[in-house]
Length: 447
Ligand code: URA
Image (cartoon, rainbow, N blue to C red; front, side):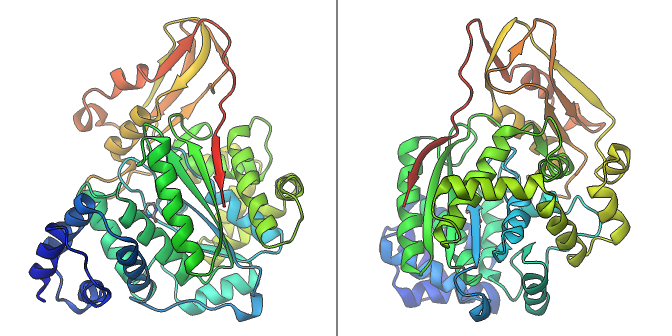
């Protein structure tokens, strides 16, 4: 069939066979498939969905669109974690070095921002020099020496996901079970991991709005992942409120480093999620017997500085110069601020009531950061790493009338990019007159 015929078949709800899916995916690199074909096919998949057979064929065709990594020498110890995307979701950044500090191997192929959700790679690139495109040899060296690396798809590693991901981001085709499953699991199976934790978000700022949708996505992720030979555990977690205190690119690196330094005042919310998911990987690889031991082993890497040292080594191996890396892990906030620069155009959000923080609208805050340049609207958009939001309060904290509860680092032409940014910023807080129980992030663990 021709490419338009394949699109028509999907549009009409007819199942594509494995050869047809392989033909389409191969066409992404051999020139048979153009951007307009991709947009149309993605929308047809989004609307019609895919059968189990189609999802499996899509995942393996994407995986096989390039080369695969192999780790026979580390068998049993190769792990990764991937999230479906959230606001303030920087879990991977401290997690990969912490796992490496526990002697696991973490070849983490990550993603850029999708829609309003931030991307791990974009955040890492706010450190000058950080390279996300690595050759197979560089990845092998990094995993053998440091133990972890966070890098992107490339012309050689899962080029199909690289292409589809950038077009999904700008064609409103992200929240599709078939596309999310094939995107995430093609990357993870290229990595050749033994064990995998998947964090499936639900809520107003997640791609899956309800727990039912998230459970359905988790079901598919689990099924296809196990079929591909990865021991998998899925977490279904709340995403109505931002994770941690920071949202943005440079600012989330700063917050990740604060956790790795175990700096007083670092986010407990972030720490708990990282220790839980990392602890689970230690259980899945039988490095510990219980999740309690796993959590504690992870936490210890932050307390004793071993995760921070791995982070330092990882970023140097990925292109950051030694002076910059040293400054980033130093205790000098000014030195860190001079590298992870935040916009000096600042606004404060002020509470209009006295009470307790009940909710912080991550959909609104994520949209502000994206629209002000922290995320993309077109695949060619250049990011402004200096845009971000720092929360001064978290769920359950008390707040006074007229007290500031968040700072926005906005960039100079904020109202041009998003005229209602200040109204939305101020309207993102919900205050309750009575005490509020702190946030329960984990809704369910599957697998
Ligand atoms: N992360 C990915 O890698 N792909 C998706 O589709 C969503 C989140």
